[in-house]
Image (cartoon, rainbow, N blue to C red; front, side, top):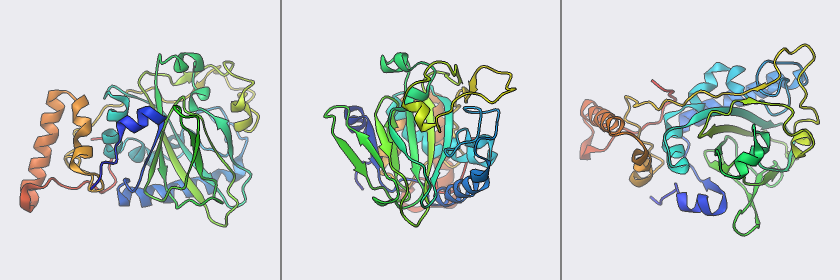
Length: 302
């Protein structure tokens, strides 16, 4: 099996397309929850809410605050494996999880932007004072008509339109410019976007950036609803505590090298516990060839 977790390519171009990597049961459950959530809130656009930018819009940010069961996907052990090598650290923080479902014919697309425009300090992010990465779960097969994601290569300036399939990950560094068009197909296009950072940046001053593409993207209105007491947008800023996972964390959709790359960024005690858990699972299930248990079920942190 080829290496899919290409850190060098990600650093070079500012994004990475990993094909067929999301554990299958997690994929199907996440897809169902995200599509149902969009259908639930499509008739509530503009209504005030405490979290995120202060109101319901077409891209449901802070989605786990709308359906708490989504946190199992946002903090899935599989995401630990992928994120640590790309951040080159296991000291990470939660920031935002977002349901980006485009219904057939819906007037919903994203102009050219980078995700750090949404953050607390775009200039500091551009200078590298903190880092964010968006890990997009592709939940449905995409076509040219369904509103696929296009990314601008930070080295060449060229654009790549990514026609991703269900089970893929599209990973975009926070300063990388990208876009996506409206869904003109007759099928739902669904993405679950998991954004993490290397510093706690969850409370955003809404005054920081009120005249950019960001305003157009968020339905031309980022102002908090009348009567909202806080002057901040509220996103996660919790430290992401990696689990050692009784299943030992081994994704059968990744080769051994990709499965273990993240261990370089853990403490010795964490690595020892994970390897022991793998051995315990092997012993318990009497698997041959001493192969580690394959992690496929939905699972959050212990």
